[in-house]
Structure formats: C-alpha cells, structure tokens
Image 1 (spheres, each protein chain N blue to C red):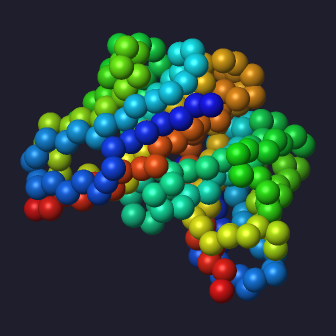
Image 2: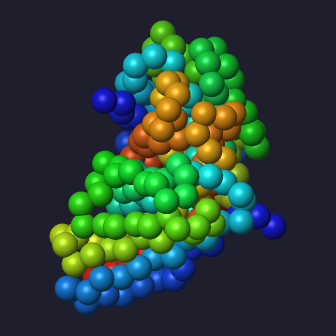
Length: 116
Length: 116
C-alpha cells in the first residue's frame, strides 16, 4: 500500500536558519503530494502541493519539489521565523479516480520549534 | 466565512460510554472524512463519505460509527468497543470525488477525547 515517511523530529532551529524536512513516499502511479501544517491546538492547513513530477509547490516562503526519480518531496525554507513553529505533515493522494481520490496517506509529522 | 466546525473541543468519557463528536461544514463540499491523530503516528483515516447517505470504512474503523443524513453534517460516534479511544479527532471535507481539487482537504480544529 501507499506510505509516507518523514524525517524524525523534533527539529529545533534559531530564527533565520535554513529549514529542510525530508519526505519520501511509496505509491503506485503518479500521486499528488502535499505539505500540511498544524499550529498548536488547531487542525491542519494546506501549506503547498504538487501534482506531477518536477512541479514545485510554494507558499509563505516554503517550497517543495516533486522528485519522481527519488520519490521525494522535501520541504525547505530559506529563513525560518518563530511563527513557523508547528507540526508539518507530508501526505499523498493516489492519482487514480474513484472513491479513493480524496483519501490521503499522511506521514507521522515533524515538530519544528524555532527560537528567537 | 466558510469552514468546518467541530464540537466539543474537549470531551471526557468514562469507560463503557459511547460519545458522539459533531462535525458541520458550510463549504458545500460533498466529501467528508474523519481522521484520528496520535502522537508520533500521523493521521489515520477512520471513515469517509463521498455523498449523502453513503459512507465507507477507512483504515481503523473498528469501534467507530458514522452517519451522513445531511450534506453539512458527518457525526462520529466512538463506541465502547473502541479499545483505546483517547486521541485527537479531526474532521475534514473536500469538494467531492473525481473533480479538480477533490484531494485538497479542509480541516476542522479538532476534538480531543480523553477516556477516564
């Protein structure tokens, strides 16, 4: 079955540091890939997505590139802020149509803490 | 503003009791989902519904039940058969199956259930 693996956390950085959170996946075909963010005590929010190989998703200074050859979708940000402290989830959804289309498979989440 | 409302935010239950978590959306979305979140395990799908009066089991449906009598509402009942119900429960919705954006989920703020 489909699966998503994220780097182990927690990740602790100083403000303005460079961020990378690794994500690799296993899936048949060409899934869509997502990063969601969860702030303390809240639900998840879509951060960015990519639907085909070599697509780059970007939002709020975060970027991730869909790499089919390495089955990866690593999240990066050049300069993190304290307000970026949250839990980050990588996820995929299968490409095939039908009732499975909206079902997402999530990674285990990576806790990010940014200190001033 | 459109969104998903989950209630209650916090709930305590004694062993052997059934509890029902409410999920209401005003996004006019056809599809709705229930996920369970446990620390370090990401999100796991409990049940999902692509249309009114129809729903399917997800990966961890045992001990849970749902109904979908109205498009806006998708309540989740945690029954006494659920062996380890203490968790954070997230409701989500998407526009519907087999249309653009079908795999983009909007989440509620979650309900935290604690069994005493």
